[in-house]
Image (cartoon, rainbow, N blue to C red; front, side, top):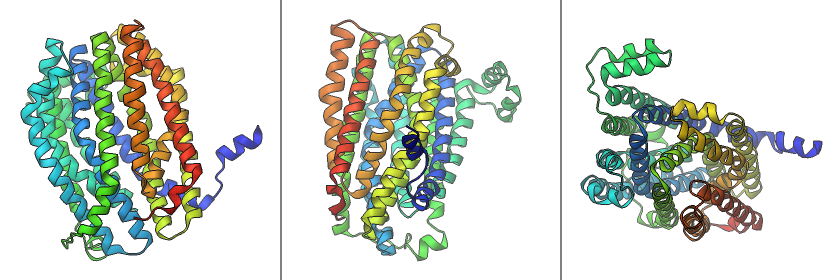
Length: 474
């Protein structure tokens, strides 16, 4: 038993373990800042009532349903950049960036416009309650404008992560999140309302940051406007780093280079994952719809728990992205042993991070939920879901990291098929049957959720052990 614990805590390769943390730490800090932004967003909107919480949660899900397609483009850019970094073909890292930017623009521009124009027709399919419906339409139509800026920023993030410049991502994320939180507070509550919000939490001195200007209270719409402005800030901040001497000279970031052959390889990597991300996000929107059919209270509670869940794996996301970069780099160097060690060191760190968060969810669910809402019914339901989530952190850490490992190696198709199949053929039908047909309500879908995650993690573990990813060329 002691040997197992020792093996779990101590690294098998200290140098690679340090490399994982060296690359992951800036991403972890940036993701923690994003978590703080999300926490403050939900805490602020949650005080507007259950309808506002349900409306923004659904709006964010619909937005991510479209934006998630760009995750595949980002991953493809990161994979090519890290592989070329290992091969010391530095100018081709820049080419991977330029290819990715073209793809992001071709996708982002029409989708951003369509989301803005069609929100009024799309949202009613997912929400039927009149108050939350109107709020969600307002929120979704505005936030979709930011999709084009976020799409380009995703590709820039993939490039800088691929060339091991994760501090750039950290700096950009922290500043843009500060902008978002600052504008959120003022635009949601207005200059007078924000004072009472922070005073009630014993932080009245902070409200002075908004007294210099008379912010109107825009509620849910204000949250969307704040996100839009912050996404514009993020894009221009990323672009600033493209003008650095190293970026201009070593990676040729300002020299337009489009390689159609490389772009085809990027598309081959991007399309399976992009399709998966859209399918998964739309699937979760249907999951939300099922919860909405059970009741508005159950929907709001689920959205709140999922916000907390995203917060829990954001630090581990940094480990996953570091894993993908190191796997790609070491495969470019043709050092498969180091690539494999990087995977298991990353899993170990993800277990430590997510496992710690899981224990907090299990032991302190009421305390965590009370930060977001004072509704006793939401807290009562949320305790059950949050404890389930806490137990699953140890399982999710494995599947989460191995998903990144396969992506970094260039296998985006297999995890895409597995996760999409599990969501649409298992999670959604079983949630509908248990929650609505069998009458278990809120608890039914949350009892199905562990089955989905366990199978997903197990299948990816078997795939990594099989080892066929070691022969992939990109």
